[in-house]
Image 1 (cartoon, rainbow, N blue to C red):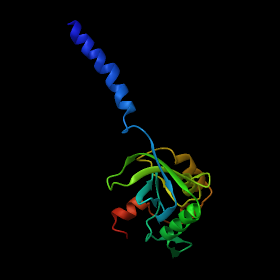
Image 2 (image 1 turned 180 degrees about the horizontal axis):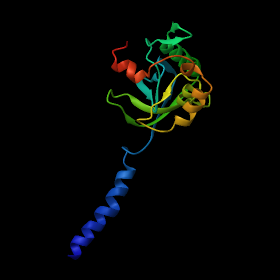
Image 3 (image 1 turned 180 degrees about the vertical axis):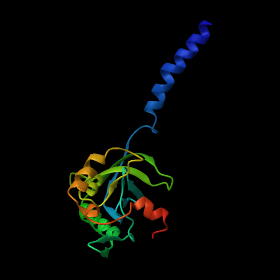
Length: 164
């Protein structure tokens, strides 16, 4: 019985410490010049990076502004380009998505890129994955910034409808 208790003690004390020190749990950083893929994705050092916690309109997605069809996905992509142009982009990450893209929290020019996109209304808080940008989205919605001044469907619904 004494050996059993000792074994349990070792398991519960030392294995969790080993797991916490494992690279699986450690944050990693990728940084460099970024190429913009779309309103929530970048290419840095040959790696695709998806901004964690937000969802921007797809590049071909359209919205309606005062009855006129506008390319809101292209607008979101253009704003992303403005945020990262000429800057070193640094992304901290711990995970990848099902497409093997890095899921990162990225900064450029001293700004959190995802937060800036949501604040300006060019991306939505992706509530399913984190509550981090909900308050920022509320500010954008109340001020009718970006998408919030248009008629739009969420990027997720647009993708599931086949882009229609």
